[in-house]
Length: 518
Ligand code: GLN
Image (tube, rainbow, N blue to C red; front, side, top):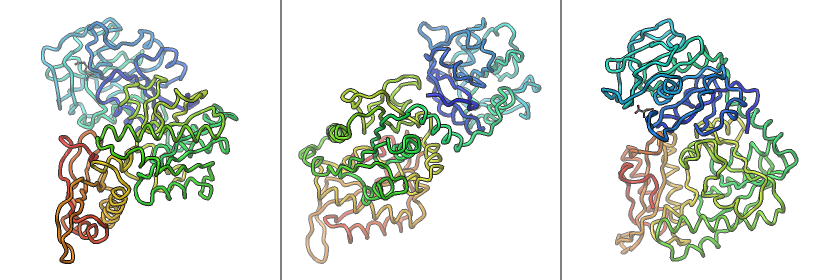
């Protein structure tokens, strides 16, 4: 899907750890940017008319057999290219330089001495600064036409350029915050060297996307599985602007949503809501509970919920008649996680719609948010006027509360966890922690123990509260919730939620724990 006439930079992905950051930094410079796999054909890249190309880092060694590569002609498009780490090594390798095992590898913060302060890449940057290094290989012979523009103690060719051809290569990682002027260096590349205006804003993305989708969809019928989560909500509203009444949203209520959530989704997206979507809510609570009876093993639960979801969605879709396009709320981290590398047409087996395309026939899949990060999706959502309550909500798993209940799922347990969770959320908000904690919720342990309430013996469940702080959801720390808040939550839960006589606060970090509690 093209975003025409938009000033853009293309980042070519060689599998490095920080690739997501590269794209994000470029957008922070006010320049729209998309990621492509190194496997993408050259024509696909040149057709997009990028103002600049950035080659990322990567785990391979350029001289090894089967190493990720790029066509040499990439450097002859007349478009400025910046190679980062592996990208820099590859540029040298392809243009006639030499790369080998570095006599001393560099990892971490390293002093960088700039040898060519007049380089456009280093405009306004101090002559000595800290950079972040992470490499085993290094450039030993420069390609013809290049000169060294910076070095470090162990790395004589820490940055190079062929100014007249607008080719730049840096061994360090400007995208990482540890590189002290990294953002300025990237901005020098995209604005000064590539000539981008740096005026891109989320509004431009939203309006451009709507225009593009209108053209693509035409009079076709579009179907969207709405979960009420941030991504599918934003995707649905974008499509509604492009396809109007030709869009139908199907919301499968599996009965495992948080308290009040199903009503919220209907209020916002239903026929009475601001978007007046063709909205079908399927109340499938009974079906899911029946299928889940006796299922205790967490993976089995996820599978059961996923399969039943597809079945319900499929049945509903059939009742609508023929459909041309299916909308998916895939966002960039999903693309990366499923290893699709940005250019593939394969569809991630998303919890909501996995497997569906095999059963149903479509002209195509539409993934309008495929190149955005979560916070960018949120910004697009606010731009589209979706209520903050929905847009800023915390991540919620597709299988819902089903994976926040240990052991068998029953109607009674779902009710306990919904009520306890609602209290916890309310108190977190009162304490002003709702925005700072990354994810927090109540879960139901399968433990029952003896307690005493009103002088009477009880034998009831224990609820677990969990709250974590994280920026990337790969690792997480427990939130240091003040004791008074924890105590208030405990008191309210045991008083207000039937069948609970104990409350725990889970203080496990990730690793060794996971964020969810299943
Ligand atoms: N694999 C290459 C090296 O070790 C590049 C590393 C990187 O891009 N971070 O030098």
